[in-house]
Image (cartoon, rainbow, N blue to C red; front, top):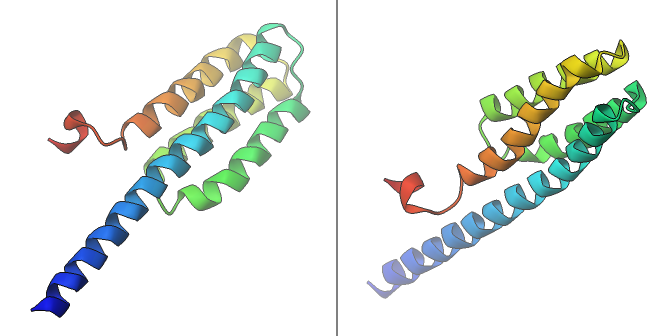
Length: 125
């Protein structure tokens, strides 16, 4: 009986610890990524963004998404990939007007994806 209760408490502690770590990691990762995309957005809005700026943000995202696959569904990561790659493609041809909406979508996802995994009444029920 005591072993069962101890096992349950240990399992509950592990689940709670992993959940807190997941929330922190996802929020922290998207916070840094949002800053990178916001910088690219500002440069694009000013007409100064280059293809290399876009690929630098892509490279940053590639490194971060490798570990986000553990915590997030593939579809969330895939949508960020799609929008970011399309924006960088527009930067390649210097079409800043078409790249801006794509970067706005990525910025929105940087706010919405972490909120979907927060501990809140709306997400539980």
